[in-house]
Image (tube, rainbow, N blue to C red):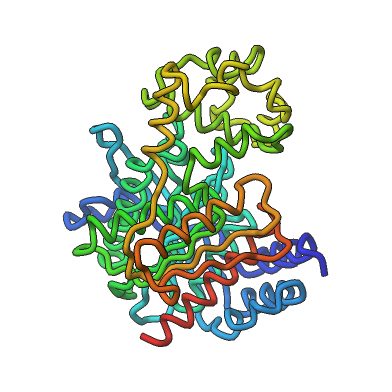
Length: 411
């Protein structure tokens, strides 16, 4: 059965098993213990039989999902939450999606960092019935609390721009979400949350996960008990990615590039004007395309895949050597994540045919870890043979969650 048929089946199962309208919130529950959590709303529930049917069909294409399917035991509840975080020194309200087992017990947490998204209507808390998010939600049935932050610029914070691939705000938003989830479970649910944390993500989410891992290990290890990290196809070295794009005659995802420059110009990190980097008419569009109402495909249609038509000749030939573009190089370097002497079990997963984010970003980072003296038994590089960027999402996610389940069972 094709994956499109899989999701049709799952949507039907959801229709008969989700109790839509059973919304709970804490408007009348003023809990003074909540320092981060602002509100929560129940969006629905899934029975184990629904989730098992979902996995049974998915196993036709991905038999490696069976270890996950074998662990499905719990009915789950789906919630959206809002919480306090900070950006540029100011407090604001952000949001995300939380999936929890219904059965009494103590459960570890998985934090999933979402991939590149430009539509507010497709943020996790706004569209919890999106097929990828349903897959994430279903993992709670195996005995985890699943946290999926929207990121800033989406959901409750959609009035601001999304600081795409910005390390500081990403770590802040994700860790504050985890603090809010802790309060939500501890103060409002009848289950318990263990200290154990597993983190994963793909594409932007792979980069966010690696960035989060480094921040936890180097700055927040007293607060978060990180057990393992699985990072899929992340643009860890942004200058490497930029070099790769500029070397291509055609690059199929120009909206990724525009997103980076829109973010860093809005953050004040890049002081060049769009016209110094991009040719007209694209230079006139970069700062208006990323308003939360356009999909990646719609933004791509407003740009061009032909590199020589997208960039100015001056930028193409001199972005590394011309001091005029120093802020570009500095911003990309500032938001790249480099290897360190980690002791956390880590997977680096990447499709071998990825032409959006080159596989060398993962292999180069792996080499960096080895150069730091990290054991190959701690950091593992996992090429996904024959997978491109889009087709690598499910294999990477399945491998990550199956690995987390095994590690958790061994604890």
